[in-house]
Length: 95
Image (cartoon, rainbow, N blue to C red; front, side, top):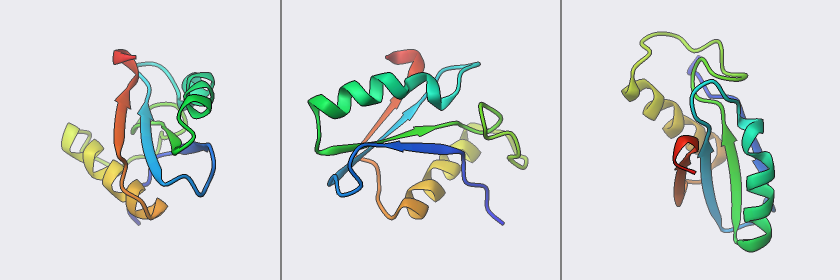
């Protein structure tokens, strides 16, 4: 079975655009919930996906290798699972 990172969706399911929000080191996706809620009010055309990258938050069971490439592959599988490619990817240490 392929690993899908733990995630929470914020916003309207029918929103035409998707944004992945990844938290910084030692965080969890829920840390960005209030930010996603505020952004959703300003940009209702987006649905926000709060992602716990491998070995962070609720995504503790990721198989090796633990590399940046594996993290990128996790996000690609998540997009397939959601049936939508992200229009935006925001990383928490940059917010």
